[in-house]
Length: 156
Image 1 (tube, one colour):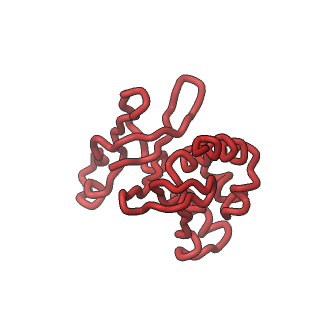
Image 2: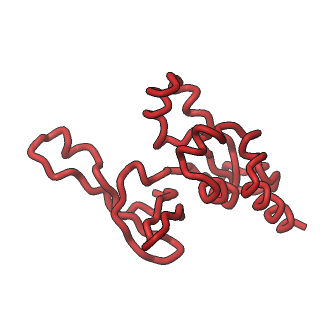
């Protein structure tokens, strides 16, 4: 399964494309906890390295060959992914602090993989949830605007 994952390096945390290689389960005598995923072993595509990560460090994205259309950020016609305007890893916090319901938290926009990566490089998930939870807010972000200008030049 393709995921977008927090990759811990010596001094930096960077989000990169990865593939889940193995689901690791919590070691416990409790039968229920052994059924729940605890950590994942992922393979980072860019470097070919593996790392163990928690569920909070993974953003699963949906990518489908038949989901083709115009990216809502760069406006290029390409294969699209679903971007959760409020990242899934922040849903519990947003329900508790802001009282938001699941339907509101589950809102997505269709954007291309390069724009999706640019969004997650620009801000951490908490900032995305609190400050950039609309397509309009994302379009105003300086780093995302810079990426969009570059991406639009690719189709000329």
